Length: 216
Image 1 (cartoon, rainbow, N blue to C red):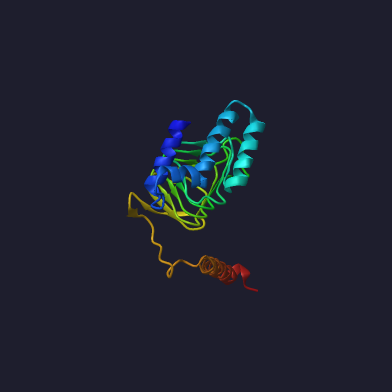
Image 2 (image 1 turned 90 degrees about the vertical axis):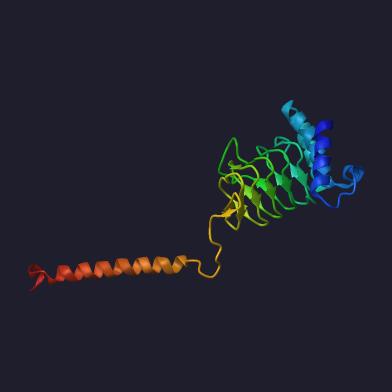
């Protein structure tokens, strides 16, 4: 646990320019406190002391505003910046050196059983208010933009934006056009399809009516 604490403090100092020294991080950073208490709760959870583990996690939530289920698995160097409103579900797995900003949810959709929450690879950054929902993986070195809602697997080295989220970059290469002016209108497209079908049916009816057998 002490080794993990050192890694967590080091990660915060490397990624937060406001962190002046290790003592400040140790005493003042709620994200660091939440992770430390979670590691204790997780150890008790693995020993099947579920009630005590949940009590610690709920106390952790009360004092830090960060809710981490004691069953969640968290690697080294997690940085929860500010942290208020962060929710991490029971079967969540987080790799090493990840960053979560305030309001992030790593949750489920309510449709799965067993593994219900996401798995984050190493060096994943999740922006403020983003929601990652479901039992899929977000690959190493990926970035989830603020406010995005991710509902499907994300390959490594990707950048995701939007609701629902879509991948706009892989390996720093743009893979889709975010032109907000010329986005196809789904209503207009459906009306065009219906018009084409109607024209086809009218033509067929006209052909049937023109056959000699149909002439009075």
